[in-house]
Length: 391
Image (tube, rainbow, N blue to C red):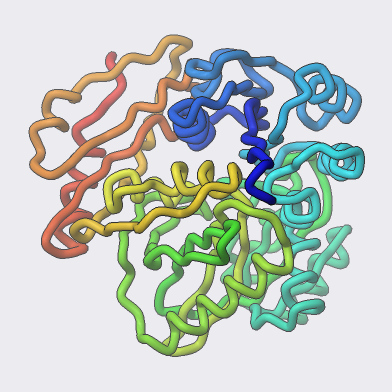
């Protein structure tokens, strides 16, 4: 660009998926003067409450998805969830639309078969052993080939839906049935993975931007039934394991292409590192960055996709987050215990303002810093435990 040319700054961002992570993306984009549109399958989703405009559509409906994107004609199309008809995004990218971080990245990470084959076969990244199965007979055979214990889940699911850790042959039938009910597109192919007896797992948030790649400090996390329960930053690990983690993250994100933040999930066993999954968007375990550093993962994501420089990242004390998972039945949920939660020193919380709850649902997050990781985790859990649905 010569001195007489002006940089063309994006003006309109369309978000596909309007959950709590998308809400933070919308807010960060608006702080930089971007006009925002939030899309999701249900009304009054968190990001819709703050976006300039919104639409309610089935994003797995290719015709409706294309029609909506063409209607708004955004400068940036930013997927925030996996349940999207990604071939439509591939088509629109070929017509000049800017899909974040790239249509290839979104399409490959939409299902575990695509990203696992890409990482293992094309890039040669270390992973657990894995097989795929379309039928129960193939599923049963694959489990016996991989060995028990093993982890099984639909190739297209999120938040642990359909996932089972099989420890006994008696669990195989139930695991198949649960997996067939937990996929985003209904019944379908399953992945069978070797169970790695890892020391811990991390999310390495990796920012690809116009000046290169930036790694955030590793985030440790705990899951239950495949879903995030709490996270903390930084996760202690050896220099060797951290270096290998960054090398893997660099390789997979470069292979996927585009700018933005990627949540690279890795298993750590001593100095050995195994690739698990990657999300080409902000990660739920990265909610801890709302309190752990001066620029959250959401701010960094927006700055990267807008082509801005990534600022110096200052990390605060050891920090933690704890998901506020509540259970109840309400089409207008309200909360108690907020005053109690706010009395906990060096802490904060977010209520996601989801419009309803039917059963168990993640409705907020507790955040805290401390002099140690354990202190921060305890404070975050105390915040979480203070907040309840109003009876």
